[in-house]
Image (cartoon, rainbow, N blue to C red; front, side, top):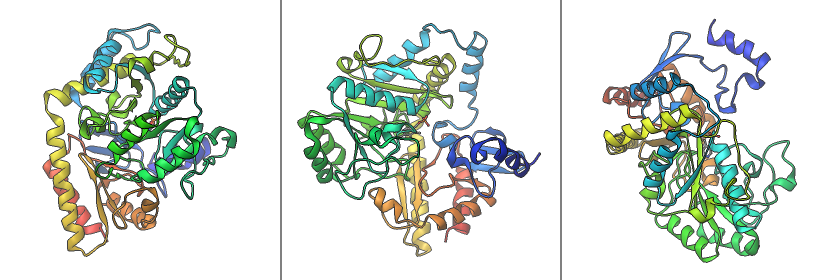
Length: 418
Ligand SMILES: *Cc1c(COP(=O)(O)O)cnc(C)c1O
């Protein structure tokens, strides 16, 4: 069967024909036959250089041999026990080693569960209800964070999905990124009832948006001063900017950290961690309930440990981040040569061209020409480069991308960018 035929059938069986919304590429998504390194091959016989990389987890590229061998080794011994294993202690140790903010950690299965738990822990620890999230920040698909961008600061969150009662999101407040004044106003308005602020230290789900100089430090200082917990959602940035994530890169230590994506080496995982006094609230040590059949899944833990080992032993970040810098420089030159007023954004191995000017927050991202971007996506796709299909998703460079891949990619941008 072809991708088109499969998608026709899928539309009768799966809502929108897919298992997660961003995959519903028009007119139909390509169905994958296999993937290796930087390349992904569809069942219609096309090969693409992949910059989607599973939406972030595959920092070493597809089917990395060290991860594959580790997973096979674990499969030989079984894959689910319902009882602890050595790897959860080992991976917790690695996390604590690289993340100053984390003394104890709970392993879950997705980033969604990690942020859901982080918010519950923050509320349990502070005995307060409200949380503040950054407009356009994405923290998974659970009720408390599915909130529309408000028109101004200090507005109560309205659900952005059917099926979420407004009562569930009235405790979710919002503030724009890179604006400490607006954040401070929201805190002032709801002072005694704010448990935590949850934020991506580098926004990754509206395209990459970097914190301006000093912003994260100001957020840290403000939350400390007002006695509010700071949650860094490092599901994308964790193990990506450096092994120690954005908090190491920017040298800002949050109270609670959520991890996922790269942490599982491409297998499902999530983790929430923080200081001992906070994490001891989590069941069974404390009274914030959290549990899961697949928590601490042996295969995911093993893949995560193998990934960290490669990141460390091959000094991956140094090379990968240099490659990212070089790629962004080439893209900037291209944009300048073509006389386009587009912004090349990103950091480390995260990159994106915003079809609009420089972007410093969600409202800015919304001004980009997203239809123009979508058409560009299709042209790149035809030319054998698979970018995430939306203006608001970040492109990811992996350790498996070669100089030759990057050259071919720049050539494709040259031809298709307009
Ligand atoms: C992907 C993502 C999540 C959700 O993780 P899932 O594993 O998809 O549930 C949460 N936060 C951020 C910042 C993410 O990028």
